[in-house]
Length: 109
Image (cartoon, rainbow, N blue to C red; front, top):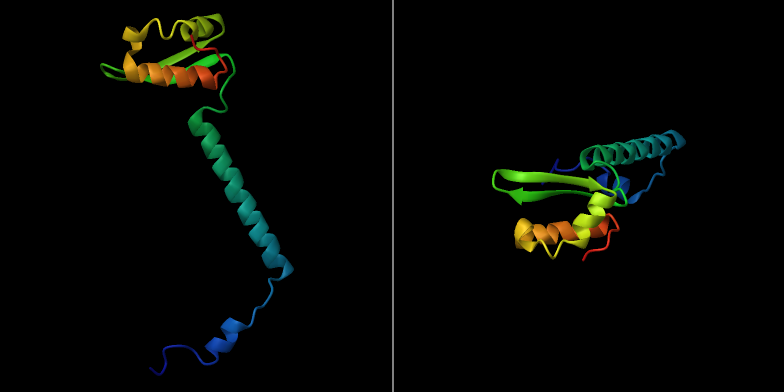
């Protein structure tokens, strides 16, 4: 099939030309920018790293998800009595709460 590839295409593909210093610098800057932007987006959308001693989660409710944000003694009390209040959260809610308690490094009782 004449004209499918430019002349000397195979030779050009075989030859490896190293990147120039400016090209390497540009690639490093672009990669760093993408990583930094991704990190900022993740931190802004997830609310940052989990706080120790706190419960930050969403539970399924009658009208959709219900936010639960507790810290300190209130969070410790909620996690300590989690299995006693099974009917309050339901089976799925209990699993979500247990995970939230463990993320906040709170003992689950």
